[in-house]
Structure formats: structure tokens, C-alpha cells
Image (cartoon, rainbow, N blue to C red; front, side):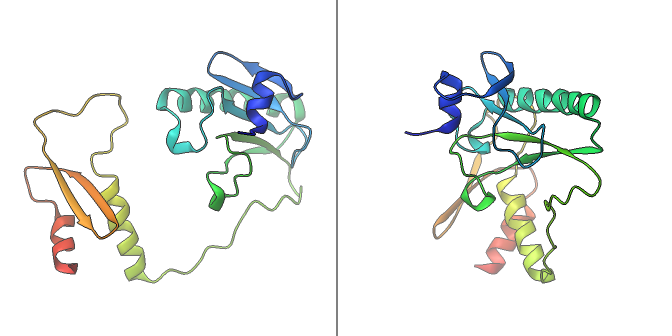
Length: 180
């Protein structure tokens, strides 16, 4: 496997390292979109956001936040973008998850904005239902779910969705039955 960031971690590729511990590394690459841009990566080779353990992700964003403050103080920028390129569709070019802290200035001509697309209300509602179904039972703690809860498996062709059973029947299941 050829990973530019793993080469930096191993010392085989040069980078100006700003912060390093046993879990994450922050550095300045030679090629940046704005002077002072800092890249923050996990030491472990994890390719996309969804693979990064919450503890490491928390630490990466904490370091990115502190580095953003340092950029404000030293470079006199007017703002920063903390940017994630996640997967090929998200513009990721290095197969290693990373956060980019990008210094911004008024009228710097960096085009990181996009034009919102018009979405049909029924498509928006369908997307909302699908995302909400897959986020069912989402927690922000490391607690293990109660063993009393029973999983409900909904199989829709190539997609299988696991929902946590609740006291009241989930309205999403009702809508799935209507659509089926």
C-alpha cells in the first residue's frame, strides 16, 4: 500500500510536524491551498471518517481547534475552514483520513463554497426518512446498549436496516410497510 501520510508518519517523507503523540500527527505539507494550512491525521492507517474511533476523532478535532487558534494568533487570518475530504466522492486523494485546517482571509479568492441544489419536497422527505432510519439509536456516549432491546431487521433488496425496538411501534416502519 502506498500512502503519502503513512510515509510521513514513518519518517520516509518530509513534512513540518507541528504536533505528534501516539495517536495523531499534525503537519504542514509542501503543497497547500492556503499558506499555513495544517493537516491532522490519525497515526493508525484509517482511510475514511467512519473508520476512525470516536476517541481519536475527538482528539483530532480538539487539536484542529487549538491549531486554528494558533493560526489566528500568528498569521492574522480572518477565519479558518476545518475541512474533511471523505471518500472519493468527497474529493479525498490520499487513502488516509485527514482534517485540514485552512487559514482564510477576506477576498482570498479560495472557492470552497458551492451552489445549493433545488430538491423536490418528496425527495427531501424520503432522504430524511432513510437517514433517520439509519441513525436510529444514535448515541454520543460509549455506553453499551441495553441487552433488553431487541433488534428489528428491515430488508429492502440490497439494503438491510437494523432498528432498535421501542415501546411504541416506530412510525418509520409503518411508512416502509406503506411503501412496500
